[in-house]
Length: 175
Ligand code: CUA
Image (cartoon, rainbow, N blue to C red; front, side, top):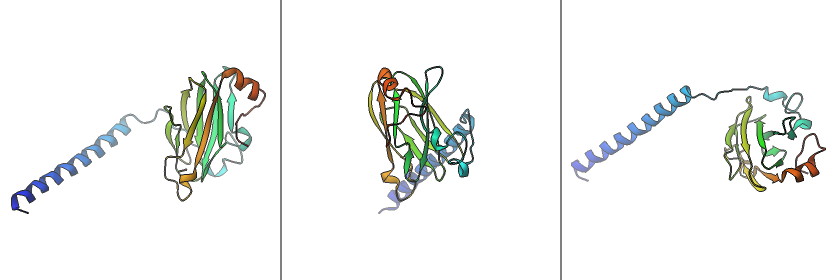
């Protein structure tokens, strides 16, 4: 290698380092400036025992305004419920939390994509225009069982949803 090419490589490396630092500073400032509008905390150690995320409260519930709220727990190594059912053409709010470590919450083919952090409630709003099935993998490495952490979302026609699940307080297709 000649002295000239070494100098060129040194400059290239310097430029790359400068870019990485610039991206770090930019994203740091960005997330400070546009902090999530609503931060909701929750006691991760008592999730199963009381309050909103008790087992009997998990699943899909239809609100008085006809929208749907889906409550879910992401834990090592499953989502509870494992199979979510929602009506199509309906505003859907997902509320998800974790009792253990950080998990990822992603519904393939939709805008739903967030992290689930213990101690916080992740809330995502969406709407499914078409009936069908979506897969819901955990996309945040959460230790040895991560690869097997999957769930499903079934989108039913509104009338079918009401016929099959209308009289359940908390609907799911698991089990
Ligand atoms: Cu849970 Cu990866």
